[in-house]
Amino acid sequence: MAGILGTLVILLILLALAVWLLIERQYQGRPGNRLELESGKWAITTRDPQHYVIEGEPALVNLTRTLEIMVPEISVEAELLSGASVDDITITTHLVSNHEDAPARPDNYWFAYIVKTAQSTGLKVTVDIKGPDLSKLKALWVKVHYLTYGPEGRIPKQGNVVVPLKFPDPNAPQNWRSTPRAEVLPIPTHLLGPLDSPIDTVKRYVEPYAKPGDIVTIGETPVAIMQGRWRHPSDIKPGWVATRICYFFMPTSSLATACGMQTLVDLVGPTRVVYAFVVGAIAKKFLGRPGMFYELAGDQARLIDDVTGTLPPYDQFIVLGPQNPDQIVQDIYDATGLKAAIVDVNDLKAVKILAATSGTDVDLVTSALLDNPAGNADEQTPVVLIHPKS
Image (cartoon, rainbow, N blue to C red; front, side, top):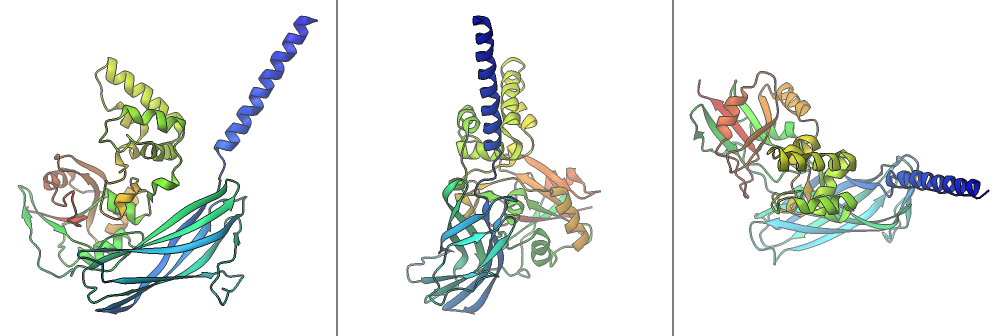
């Protein structure tokens, strides 16, 4: 009898464990309060020397397919990026709802709104800027603070839009640099963001200087930023794997922080990260093969830029690697006729080509970019045009 009872106890414990694991698995895969801000359309509707008006129509998108997310509170904040002091400049922001099924209130009060499953709702944002001289302004950083209310409780979130205010003259004289195999031209652009695209950037800034046979290269970080692949650390919840494994990386690595590592976990999954870490550690310790972690964890492991890794205001964010780089370079070629490459270059003479159009001389691209003509500081020259000498 005692043996039967013992067996039943063990079976009940195993059953309880199986139920717990099932619930935990469901919990780990929960969609949560997945309500995200899409940039939408923005325009500078007034541009006088002492007065700018910027208007935008972003949207709140419910990325879940089974859950409704509520938005009980929302507000907007604006910050200027400038080449001079902004002490004498005033900013006024205005936000109203733009729901399809409910008009905005006359007093502009934001009433708690439900965004249904796989649906979205709109906003109208106006930013009024006044000052004695606005010519030094580079960009406007619009922060939309909104409170989500759903299966994860009350979760504050922040959506971000960067609106460029200063644009280089694409026809201005430029200084070409000579390398053994090519002439190289770093091309300045406005502060690129999710309102831009690689094709439009090449058409606007590269085509005035390009000749048949030239190759245009774009840094991988600007491409990722244009794709909206940047996350604020406040929106990242480091889990057990990220908080433990990040301590084993060099302090200069973008994976040496819990949030930086969690972005990789979110991309490839905790199992792959743990596997890459264990095998990579064994390979380094006993086989003398460093770098196996990055090979096993995938390309994104090398491409993540943690906070401080790029130009303001993106230095406040974690920037991921670009998505579908092969398709991007092909789209550039189809639209402009220029061969293209997406590259990761640093000041240590390391050149990594993520993607290049068919027939591109990658050795030529590598040699032309060895000295990192785009720079790693605030040059704001994310595009480099390569003109082969032969």
